[in-house]
Image (cartoon, rainbow, N blue to C red; front, side, top):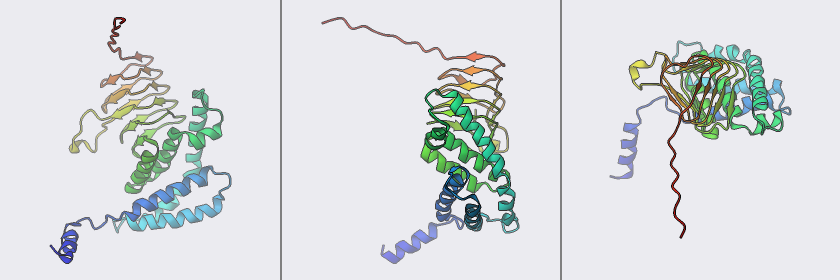
Amino acid sequence: MNRQSVVESINKHKKQPNLRFALKEKVESFTNLLFYTLFDIDTPVDANLNKLEQEFDVLVQLACWEVDKPCKKLWENYVVKLPQVLESLNLDAEATVNCDPASLSIEEVYMAYPGFYAIAIYRLAHELFLEGFPLVPRLMTEYAHRQTGVDINPGATIGNSFHVDHGTGIVIGETAIIKNNVKIYQGVTLGGLYVAKHLQKTKRHPTIENNVTIYANATILGGETVIGENSIIGGNAWITASVPPHSTVFHTPEIKIKTLPHA
């Protein structure tokens, strides 16, 4: 096979007309600029909003494939939500300072906590998701996932004062509902009980009520599963049914220690 044949063969099999990886790179640039605009004290908000609008226009050109959809109005609808998103994120940062004895300052949370960064990008992406523009928010949260190890689908619904401790390995599915003052530790999965394409439009992931703490590596599955308020889910628990309010759920492993005889 000569070079021309290789070129023709590759072109023949490139079947996705909208697959432009430049979109992924530009979403990452947009996400970084958005984060700095909201949090960095030396970043001018007014000037950056102009830059963000320009970058967003490029994203629309690359990702708005439905010609009859008014994607140009998306930015106008989105930008007015940013103050409210920032208010929510400040509550998340305060929750982390109040929950984590290792945190020395709120500035440390904003700059150094991967859990907070993942929540921030989720909240910024979620508002775009609600506007019916799904690919860009998915790329935003996947960018945060790559940086932090925290995978939050932009379709999830998360209340106020959400604390993610350590973060690595957390998975929160698209239809999960997390209410207020919830604390989640590393390795927690809020997932689906079954994986099947026909369930796409159904609630597949659990609901976590107010004031719940979920410790490391717990797995909670199923769209009908509700963790009642003020409950504590212990590490490594596997839950596929609802838990009443004010419950403590824990996994008891069998640990055997064998003492070797002295030589």
